[in-house]
Image (cartoon, rainbow, N blue to C red):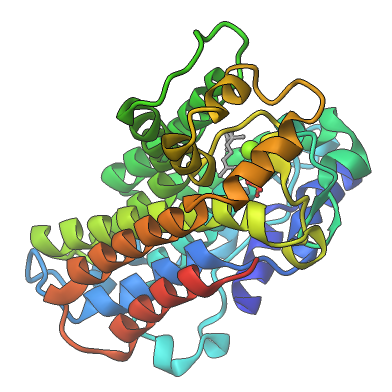
Length: 367
Ligand code: FPP
Ligand code: MG
Ligand code: MG
């Protein structure tokens, strides 16, 4: 992950010192690297599965290592100074651990792209949520202001797009571009949840369906489609590609369910970001939706987005005295079970065990 972070920092080089600084800001603190780790593990686990053709993937165009000079080489001295950027390359093979040598250069690059897209979404998310902290430090919007945080996020997406185009794989490009659109769609669904023009809510399964759909778009889409892309880059057989996607989708849903649970159960210091933020933002996530099912009194609070004085605290109490958190955990567990089941067709390997361990970590994590 250290090698990966170095590459990401190279990908984010800009001739403008301030943009360079803001774009790399969230790479200074240690992230969890869940998405790149999943891509690398999936690459290794699927390398042992059936392939679609006899083509040796290491010899195909998409897997040719990306040369430092072939990308972002806009070093024309007559060009405007701020359009220049640091050229970047894949990690030199000498540094890449021998036991991970079955991961193709294109799959390594994909791992970096997933982290770039994820970090861009955090930059934008912290503006939308008016968050003050991230990864144990001041959030980028607090440190540099909303305008620079939004533009830095856009810059990350631009550089992720260049790296993606360089993989020369239209299906993978389409998948990851769809992820970016899905992130916005998910965030929009969440905004609608907090808009003032909704009718007075009465519990129905539709609320949970809407929440899960939003959760897929804002969290599970990136994880599932990048797992799928890892298998595609490795030329895996169709059933292996589907299994990779299904694993990522179920793990992604579990990941966000746990995230929404931790917002209720862990303090800001341990989380490294604000705790209890969802209710403050007017958001009804899984623990509250389950609590509402058993306590119709929550409907009125949800209807007014916890805007009346004392609403947030009252809702917190009602969640605490309900089985909402347990039901959320149980649902996350059921998705994890489905994720593990999806990859049961993979042959036993250290990487497959790693994918299973990631499921356990997602359930046990406290930040
Ligand atoms: C974190 O959720 C946010 C996301 C998983 C996705 C955010 C997506 C956008 C802001 C859309 C625009 C993004 C791009 C890349 C175009 P959270 O607020 O529930 O989690 P947190 O507690 O970590 O803040
Ligand atoms: Mg947020
Ligand atoms: Mg948010």
